[in-house]
Image (cartoon, rainbow, N blue to C red; front, side, top):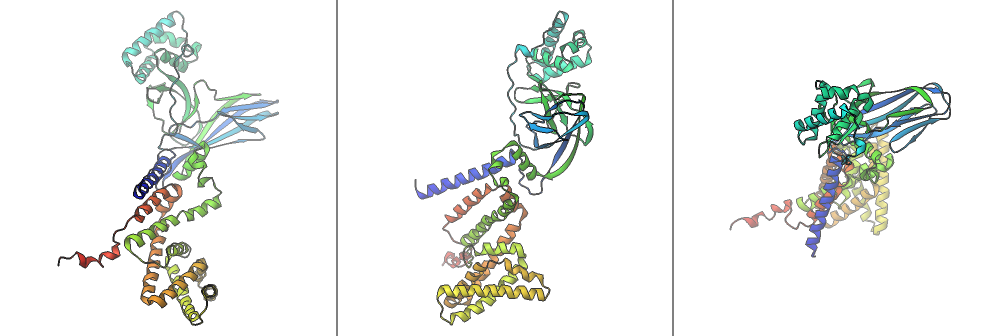
Length: 507
């Protein structure tokens, strides 16, 4: 494989990996490409109350689940002197002895993100254990109802389910009345409905959950049916037969799972309170990713301490500056004093602001060039001369800072943000260039450096670009691919078009 093909392959791989990872984080993990995007986060508080018998107490609560729409961000508990342990599905509180009224709080925060993160599991085959055994007239009534709803619903599980609920809720048919009279014997209305649907070949689950449609107190879980329509699970309200959306629905109990159990107490009850707030989408996505153990979150800069994360926020801007330098030098043809000096100066401008940064840079470099011109008459060797320039630069920094304090001019103190070594090398390079090429080239390269640094500063200050490289650092691979494409360009620069324009004229 020749060099060009290798380069093209590398560029394609970088683009696919970088864009693919970014799209995955956006569509699946919920990261937003816009920095100010906010989402609704719901805080749910479950309150368990009971009266302890005076002996050891164990409280077990089924925790909220992640679904395809709703994602749990965090879970915590408040229980005075109770030992809390987390199990796969449950939260368990224990205490060696307790007497009287007891209150335990379980808190969870959740939000709805657009991408599907939890794949709906395929239903298990219907077995005899899913069916309800009827006797006598009830058996005949059940068979008659199943025959009728299949005629109405055909092969559509949702249509069959709605037809059955219409039969049972209206109770106009004698066959429905026969079964409803004995519904407690079969486990209640929901269990009766589930058993009949199972007989009709419909995969169905009993579920309980919360609809987060409004802030409220003393909210109870809603009992629903979940029907598998052949592709995904659908929620049906057993009272109306209406299909409910999964949006803003938090699944709490599925199938025969127990909601909560209290051992060592009596008169137990559970109620919920919910309220909503707006948070940044990226912050919510990071919390959800950490809670679910997403690899792109666990092995990323989000796993670092906050101080290091703030450092990387700045470091991740440097590749943007490198891209600007590559474009301006290789495509536009602007000359700069050094390749990456404009990037470092732009980083300084982030601390000083652009206007005062330009003024301080010009003052320091101008004074430094005057002092460097004097050193050239002393015929010093290279290393001592540069070291002397470095000392001069530090002296200039001190003088400007002291004068700023005396003149009550605080902007002058920002001169300390300039990298002293880079300024010293810049002064040395410009002085040598002045001696060898003349002042014109010094102004061209100096002006080009400041212009490039100003463009980089504006790019780094852009909130949208800053958010992209921090929330989607994999996009740096795309940026690298662009740099490699520009690196293979060997055509004319924009600044050369005018220079060679007479060659295109017809003689």
